[in-house]
Amino acid sequence: MNVFITGGSRGIGQAIVLEAIRQGHEVAFTYHTSRERAEEVIRAACAVRPEARCQAYPLDVRNSDQVDEVGNQVLDDFDRVDAVICNAGINLNGLAANMPDETWQTVIDTNLTGSFFVARQFLPGMVANRSGSLVFVSSMGANGISGQAPYAASKAGLLGLSSTLAKEYGRRGIRSNAVLLGFIETDMTREGLSEGNRQFWITYNPLGRTGEPVEAARAILFLCSDAASFISGEAISVTGGLDWGP
Ligand SMILES: NC(=O)c1ccc[n+]([C@@H]2O[C@H](COP(=O)([O-])OP(=O)(O)OC[C@H]3O[C@@H](n4cnc5c(N)ncnc54)[C@H](OP(=O)(O)O)[C@@H]3O)[C@@H](O)[C@H]2O)c1
Image (tube, rainbow, N blue to C red):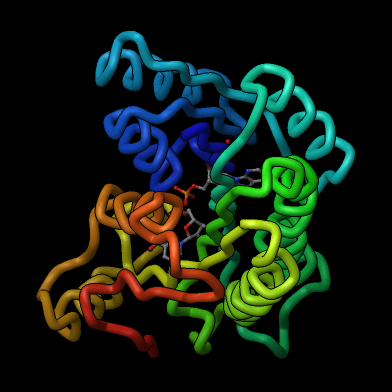
């Protein structure tokens, strides 16, 4: 399978790249700010499977022209893309009443609009192939989480986007699904999180721990795979059982 992943330079995206390589897939992934991080991921991918094909492309998902350019380049380089994983995302904290326009807009543009641009770019190729799989990386925050209004709204928006695409393109052989991730150990959850807050996620989680990026990656790649051939329009939780936040 040829897999395209946004935000593959760190965290969950990096874990998806490496797990996809381990499973024998070819991988194109994007990075936003750091070419060096992307090159490290490529080196790690080669260590997992030396003959693996793994290429990185710079992309700001908020820019639809860039999405078109990178999408066309990936299709030129790989001929076809079988699975698209819209993973790139950010979180900016703040209470709603004081939130600047820019905070709201940046999060929505990156998490929701960016994912739409990416899915739209690859749909025509998938329609032509009469086959393809989309996975949107949402969050249990989609149900609402204090101090993260744009994040919650963007992640809830992805659920509507994913199930709409499942309905619009199912008859063309395309499946679309989302994952609702719980607390996964990455830069996003490490940066600016108090010890008290971290303890909350461990104490109330039925498994008594936080998740590792590879645990998210495996669920996402399952949804891309033929093992999930009759699963579409679905949102599966990968939370260790803790599906609510404060
Ligand atoms: N970690 C969690 O607990 C958790 C829980 C629920 C959902 N999620 C979701 O999982 C996804 C990955 O999160 P993570 O925890 O792995 O975060 P992360 O470690 O902060 O990584 C975010 C990734 O997104 C990329 N990115 C950010 N802004 C971008 C933009 N404008 N255009 C293109 N790429 C951009 C980053 O690229 P650079 O490295 O180049 O900056 C990076 O690769 C996100 O959608 C997040 O909302 C995470």
